[in-house]
Image (cartoon, rainbow, N blue to C red; front, side, top):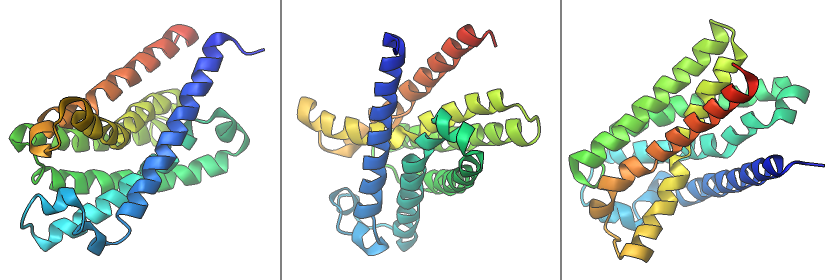
Length: 214
């Protein structure tokens, strides 16, 4: 019989998986082609933009969407233990998507709504995503420490999930506060979308350290 704590973790993981798949599908459907971007309201509100911006946004949306959709699978214990080869293949896909998504995110950060505060927020998210990925890969390829690898990838996926929290906070700002202009909301959401995620990741890591003694 499962303990209450185990049941809560199962439910939390299930909710994460649902949101990851939903947002991943949302990104791939909504941004199915570069041309479809030009019709989105948040894009038309930004006015004239370089043609490169539309291509970069499309690449970012697709790669980040795939990363969100597959990333949660890497934390499924059964998959890691029973199908390590599948875990490795998904890791290759996830790594490629994060690298491209992080680099394109840096470019897009310069055009973010909400002024320089939002631009720094989104830019920092991209840098942190690339850095934690680097540390995660280094820990497993160079140091060969799977536990340390897991810690860094928890942090990395928490940052990746900013794509989920962003799409939760944006409509909430409109529904609860009546704020629908991203120039007003992104000054806060650019940070709120990922800082609490990273703090939660650190809490999870510290709890595991206390439980495992390492």
